[in-house]
Length: 382
Image 1 (cartoon, rainbow, N blue to C red):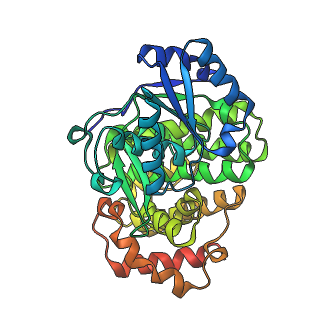
Image 2 (cartoon, rainbow, N blue to C red):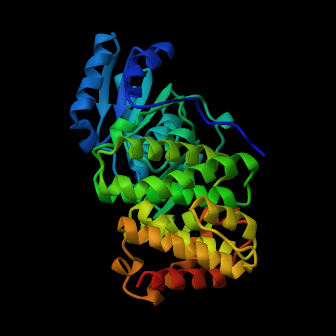
């Protein structure tokens, strides 16, 4: 069991004000902000750059990051960082931005393409630059994981690079402007990370404790943040939940739910959080057959009560139904909005079986079972 944390975290409203101190402590004199067009247009982003320049830290930027970062973006960021001769990276954005920066940091001092480093551990890579990750959504927890999920455009599939940040700065105030749909999608990503951290094959007491706390926060505060985005208490708790879930699944990994979400993202361009949400009820229903204790703990963290006489199937149904209620409350659309038929949904089961996350299921899963799960996902919200 690995109880380590990927990197130290500075957390709290206003924490971004510590960026110049963090970079100074890392010895950085010229950093490149890695971000997207939306974040780079925000007034606080400009203020952040100004404060660094006042602290004698030069700032360049790459602001063309895309959702589900394609491999060629990773190459572009690394190339620009070398050409500018920066000595540090600052990723500011959602999970895609942070994943892109983590992946690019591998290529800065290592030859080849992203495909040469899929699942290659950091100890088998030359070290990149100091990297500070600053999330602007509460969802992926990417600032506290060693994983970078990128899109392999040659093979049209998601793949994994491994490179943690040096420091994470989590400032809930940066999430205040996230619109309701983004808040809902990313919030359900937190939930998916948490339930899979509790039930994955590599689960452990550390991941369980953090993930259950994260679930409690999501269930209580996600509907509030979706309804009232300016509620700082809700934003703080979701930011904490995201970070805790990231730390949790960094040691436990995820499993079938994320395998499904990755393929839905590649096949139908469904945002990752929505794909995770769609998969979560049936992930729990299937998992309850083998891990009723863990699924019951998840249900209790959601506020459910159990008589103690429920069998495994009853536990799974009760918790799955509660997740469907949460999804409806925050406006998660059904799979049928993106996919024409149940047959079409089932047809991607082979791609799901091939996803690396599936190997981390609590017990081995076969193609027939995945087909059954996909059929239930398609019909669950209709």
